[in-house]
Length: 223
Ligand SMILES: Nc1nc2c(c(=O)[nH]1)N[C@H]1C(S)=C(S)[C@@H](COP(=O)(O)O)O[C@H]1N2
Ligand SMILES: [Mo]
Image 1: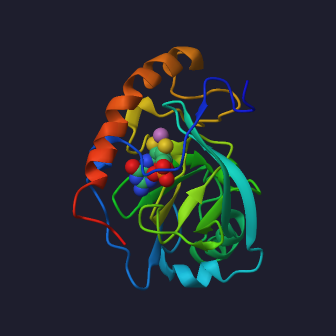
Image 2: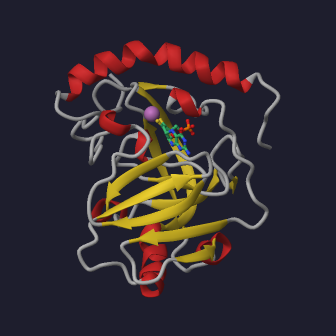
C-alpha cells in the first residue's frame, strides 16, 4: 500500500493534460502579464513580477494527482499564495461581493474554475519554482496554479488570466470536470461515484500519455 489517495499510482511529473492541448505549446513572454476580469468594477492587467514579489512567498512539498490515476509525489513548489495575490487584486478590481468562483486561464487557452473559497486556501500557490529553480516551459512557466487538495485539472499551467465569477464555469474539461474536484473525496468527475470514473479514466490514460509523449518528440520545444 502506498500513502497515495485511493486509486492513484506514483509517476514522475511529465507534461500531461487534455488531449487537445498536447500540441499547444505557448511561448512564454519576457514580461508576463496577468489579466484580471469578470464581475469586477475595473478589470486590470498586472505584471506577474509584481505579484510574485509580494510578501508571503513560501515553499511547500506536495503531490499532484491526475484524475487518470497517476500521481507525482514530493514536488517542492515555490511561489506566492493565491490568497496574497487575491488581496492585492481585489483591492484594485473590486470584485462583486457575491463573487464565489474563479477561473484560471493558461497561455495555451486551457481554463479551469474553482470555488473562490477553495482557491483562497493557504496551500494554493501561484508557483514560479519547482525544486528551487524557475519553472521550465514544460512545467508551466511563467507560473502555474498549485492546488494540492484538487485534481490536476484544476492546477492550471502557464497562468495568464484570472476571472472572478458569480457562477461556475465548466472550463476546458467541460462536463467531465467536477465543480470542486477534491482529491480526498475522489471528486474526479460529476454525477457518478469516484470509483466508476477511476476505472474509466485509468483505461484512457495510456492513450493520452502516448499523445503527450509523441508530442514531446516534436521540434516545438518551449525552452
Ligand atoms: N495550461 C494547462 N494547464 C493544465 C493542463 C493543460 O492542458 N493546460 N492540464 C491539466 C491536467 S489534466 C493535469 S493532470 C496537470 C498535469 O501537470 P503536468 O503537465 O505538469 O504533468 O496539468 C493541468 N493543467
Ligand atoms: Mo489530469
